[in-house]
Image 1 (cartoon, rainbow, N blue to C red):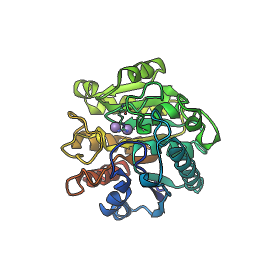
Image 2: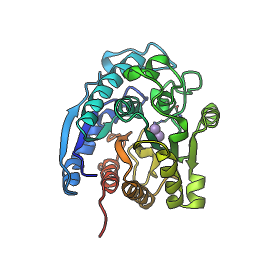
Image 3: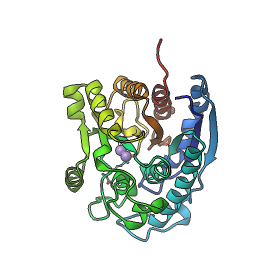
Image 4: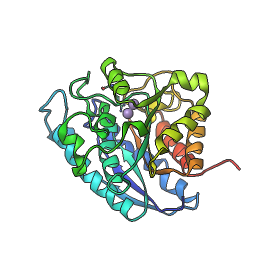
Length: 299
Ligand SMILES: NC(=[NH2+])NCCC[C@H](N)C(=O)O
Ligand SMILES: [Mn+2]
Ligand SMILES: [Mn+2]
């Protein structure tokens, strides 16, 4: 893994209901993401931010798909930008923003890496559709979108669908799944390691399996890291916190195992909300974890 790292910010908060997550990219940059990765001997290029409209200038047209036109437009722009940097041979790190941005980031990566596996590190499943959503928030739908389930416009971002085969998708850290979302996860055959499996088998075993499933027949793994996967003690600055999460140590071991697998080609860091945070703790944890993902080790 000696590729140039490209950082792309997406100050998006329209995919969910709490203000402040649009400042995530700034908080993660303030936690020195660039300098920390450079210290690992990597070249890092910050590509700046994708333009995102502010909630004040937009109106909600569809209560089951809030800010659909805006989210779709940003997703297309992000997909183009991510496609660009992957074409240049870079490793993209996309800074959210809420989790709806993964629709665009995965659309961008799969322009070039056709067979992509995904590890979705999250307290949630993000497998809702406009039919099953309890909130109308698109950040609860990106994983369904990427396997081709849900709203047509979102599913076809980047001009093709589906982006992922469900048999190469693994959710890790789940502990809050909506009833109909649970049915969709089962119906599509997505592997879901909840906190129950992490407690019972240990994070090492879970990650070993997750990496095997995501890399089986694929040309790379995308890590979608929702910081609400980590316990709120280390990541309090998220819009939808859930008790009983992945510990700081488990998080690091998971990232170290992903590094050792040498399969990860791209990642996004999402849901960091500095307004809800404690002295930027969540952004700092995000940077610590991404450094482990890129090879930082104690010795
Ligand atoms: N990316 C996230 N934090 N997603 C939370 C989703 C919460 C809930 N399942 C919903 O659909 O609204
Ligand atoms: Mn999520
Ligand atoms: Mn989540």
